Image (tube, rainbow, N blue to C red):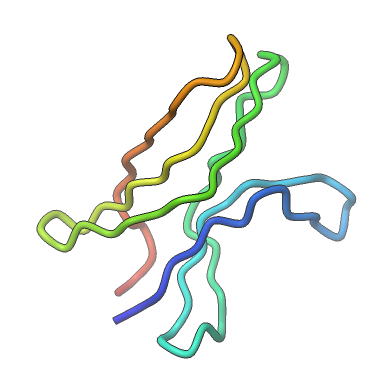
Length: 85
């Protein structure tokens, strides 16, 4: 069993900002980056991902937030969990 969270506007040591989904153990330790939800560079899009849910029936993660490409609108992304359970 694991916990999951979305890091909204994280900062890597290179100074680049990131938006990624992480998996931790049940005490929120040892985070592992699963995948990025960073908007595509050069598109003018920025995402504000703040919500996450896990679907155990197909081991997918649902990430929700807002996108600002055409004003603020709802955005939901489904991704398969890629880290080892």
